[in-house]
Amino acid sequence: MADRPTLVVGSSGLLGSSVSTLLGDRALRARVRWSTPDAPGDLAAAANALLASVEDAPWRVMWCAGAGVVGTSQEALDREVEEFAGFLEHLTAAAGDQRGTVFLASSAGGLLAGADGPRPFTEATEPAPLAPYGHAKLAMEQVATRILGDAHQRLAIGRIANLYGPGQNLAKMQGLISHLGRTLVSGSPLGVYVPIDTIRDYLYADDCAAMALAFVETAEERDLAHTTKILASGNGVTIGELIGLLRHLTKRKPHVIYAASKLASAQSSDLRLRSMVLPELDAYATTPLPVGVSATVEGILRQFREGELAS
Image 1 (cartoon, rainbow, N blue to C red):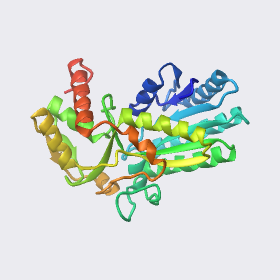
Image 2: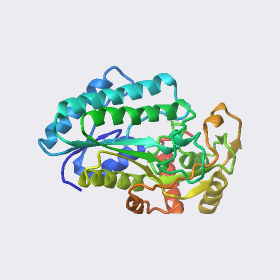
Image 3: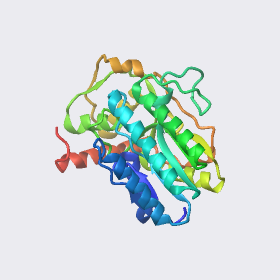
């Protein structure tokens, strides 16, 4: 990978932290005061710092930010889209003719929740979001396509499967593997509002980061103007299989309560995924599910012992 700075927006999140770790000293971490009036200015300053650091070389942005989940308010989601659009407008205006690439971390689950047709879903599957979260992700893809297309800049959209790994934000109602692990560590129950045979694709965060960076490098090398790729393991796993795996690994049964929720209507029963675009990049998904789940549970246990998690 080219030895030059790469701006990482959302570097404290699960994907962003993995991307930053892989980049090492090349990671330029955006410092953004999210959910405040200062956020647009912070993003503009980060764009300026990136362009100054690369001088006349091609620039790179890894947009890994996003606090939204299925139940996030419309107002918060609208703000995310607006901040993203404002950042791209400023970046492209400041860059002028200087070429660069933006990677956008999107959500396969959010976009394809209401999709129909044969499984596994691919990049050819028409997006059909059911929740405001999915509509916001689609809006961000559309905003990026318009702004970067008009500016003749490269765009790499990664529609990401269910991401998991150590360090996931457990304050967000997202990340089933992490929340199941928390029930094992703390003993507190977890409410699950979808059937036990619900199928998802789980991708380890470090694998996703490696795949995303290779995706950007490929887009640069081949000068791909606009590419959308599903980033997934290619393996469908049911909730029941996950619970069974956790029982096998820890010799304990997660305390799961199956409950009704209005959020269930925004979930698909089968989200198996397969990428048909740049399939050679799928080789970066190397972490077996038992290994990734073990690392995730160990990370939660470490947080619990250090007092970072409430029981």
